Length: 287
Image (cartoon, rainbow, N blue to C red; front, side, top):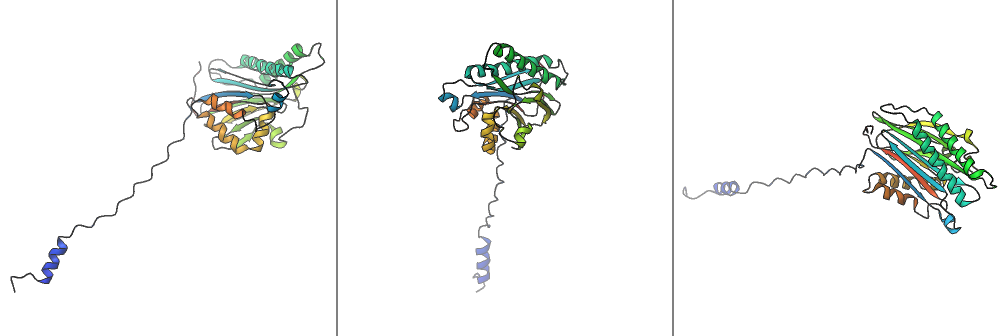
């Protein structure tokens, strides 16, 4: 009896030889989402213009015009919408307006490390030269007197912000798409009365009616100036515009992506044009 294992000893051997309990697997922490794509440059300036279906059907040219220039720490952008009875002459007025504004504002840009522009004197001079060029070149001896609405801005980077000086005549509005997706209109005519009726203020007739102001861009913000044809589409679909607008700055080819913003024939029957300045939080040295 003493040589035989007891029931307890048999149980003890059985339990002592049992495998150790396996711990439950510990879940791995979730993989954080990848960071949003970064633009390829601290400052990106884009422009796009496209003829509307209405003018295409009439055999008329695109009567909008856009222009941009960068110079060291500064960038100047402008957009114009030609008005008049003759399509080609209206297009000439728009192109003349942006060319004169860019050329004149460039003369006012500070040199070296200066970051202050004499605004609104510079804006008034630029708009005056644009109107004078239209009147001198396209009005003399003509019954059709084309004109142009116009918006422009000069932007510079100063430490941790980009400072915008802007001006506008007529119904070509100016806005900012903030980094958080908020859309802010800088021109009051859009904020109060989105679509102005016929016969908006224009150059050269209404030089003294121009509005102007300043704004500050923080990292990820982007300024834009556009013609009424695109503004009409933005007001109908603001969220879609913001999403597409922001995606252009992080695209592999920002300018190509930006161009498709104005090419949708369903957006508006009018010509659609836009210029933009995006800043992404880094300083740029003067060249």
